[in-house]
Amino acid sequence: MSEIIFFLPKGPFYLNELSDDTSNKSNKLKISDIKTLEKASKKDLTFFSSINYKSCAIKTKAAACITTKNLEQYLPESCIKIVVKNVLYSTAKISKKFYPNADLDYPDKSLVESKKISSKLSSVTFGKNIFIGKKVKIGSKTHVGSNTIIEHDVQIGKNCLIGLNVTIKNAIIGNNVVIQDGCKVGVKGFGFIPLKDKNFRFSHIGRVILKDYVELGANCTIDRGSIGDTIIGENTFLDNQVHMAHNVKLGKNCMIAGQVGFAGSSTIGDNVSIGGQAGVSGHLKIGNNVRIGGGSGVVKDIPDNTTVMGYPAVPLKEFLKKKKNNGE
Image (tube, rainbow, N blue to C red):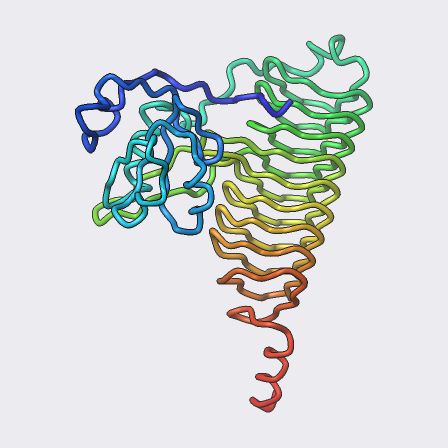
């Protein structure tokens, strides 16, 4: 199930077709796709923009990597280094060569009304005015609410409840999942590279993966990954109006209260509880068994078994001490 791909790359391309910042020895090297450091193979291009991903860079199998002068030392000798000033901008430009239409989000022309295919999904119950794309798979005893759109190749497991006015695209959904009214799953994320004269959009070619027993409250938005996936682990519950940006990985058995926002590429561990209207900045690592108070702003990593509160979020004892010293 995890091998489903929603966007197919063009190419392959010779490496020197993708970037001018390559040596002559790479002129005949064919590149099949652009992937993350962890998933890239000997035929793929990847990117390395932050020391936070050093452990992945050391082990990458990529044929070539877009990186900076300071970071290239951590890449394997077998990996061709493409040294640039702005890694994300260079990666975004190359990504558009492989996936030129990824962010246009054309209407799915394969959509048909559910009543025309209900015989093929006889164990699924449908509301009214539902449209379903080609190659969609829906497990037995799942209910899909009225005015919902499920786009091509989406997979939904058994015993799921999909509410009213839901949109699902670029997603793989496990068993016993609840997606309440108004949710948007698999939409493109807010990935931009700010430049002096304009903002340049980063293509979003990844997926959303919801594991078994996940519950999304009403009007949640779960962005698909840019390069890679956005993942919610087993038995994790999201309250209403939670937003997860591209490439966020949320562990199992988590409880996320209303209006919490996760910026892109943060990793949240297992058994984490987050109070309402808290915010988690991008590219952070939140450990297991962490508690984050409502309204907090998390701007740095949090180790396992820690409770934090405030803006910026600090350990609870420190937060309470500061309030006491301020006479609050």
